[in-house]
Image (cartoon, rainbow, N blue to C red; front, side, top):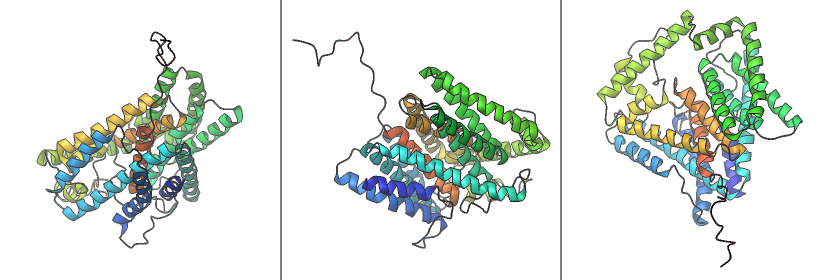
Length: 418
């Protein structure tokens, strides 16, 4: 319970509606990393003293990725900034293994993590809704001063998509009628909040989760349970789109009926990808060093403001961003890590609610990351979202897979008579 208590405190601080605390006065870029290291260290110390098993199926992929991060740090264009990024990575790895050992120590771990994340996201979204109502629901605020610590609709949109992923996993579970009704009600509320955040990439993440849920349901022969969820989502989404012109325009741009604004945003993202590819061509083997994308990209590849009066800041694709910072070998290693965790998640998605929810959450993050990079900053909500993804990495890889059923064609040696 000692380890679970520390992990609980860490997850609560992750979804806390406030700025990242900095009692040590280390600054924004180190504050969250220090919190992760301090929260994970006691859990790992107890695990080592008790000789708990730390191995996971992701260890080979993590080892290669970390080795390439350290190797490219030598040639980094800004070593102090890379050092900050490496410390953040080590903090996330510490949280990953702390979650793994806590998961193996007590069966309550996955339930506690899911409960805290669901409740925390619900609170964050309600605070954001209160602010949005003051501005008017038809407005599309670029920044949200409330909740503090979560700056804008991209972060809040990803959180809402993660909430939808967990709720879909819960709705697929066998449960009483009142529990199912409560789950569907919370799902409708979350969909409403997600719709009025006007984040098209978050909507795409939900579409990806729905596709993954359908595949899992077909494999597990639980299509009827998912059908109810699908009907609720389609009916509610249809009503919202029919009633709201802004939603109709944004939805049209998603399915290919481009508005002028939607086309402009798509062309800007495509231009950023092209410029990122040029950066990768110039630094193909060692990249620019972890954490240095904006430092090299903005003055050399995007020196002028974009039409939306912003610069790139990041590659608008998680794996392109990593490739630019770590070179082609590092980018391939990071992609292999994600492929491995999604494959493991797919294989284990039918074994329990927690495995299914973790898989859906990572699918949501992966779909969102195709057109954005939510982990580009070492501070604020971006750093927290990165750690949240690592926790779900641990939920996927930390639990053992389902025990295979005995093969009736083979004799049971334990009970066979001599």
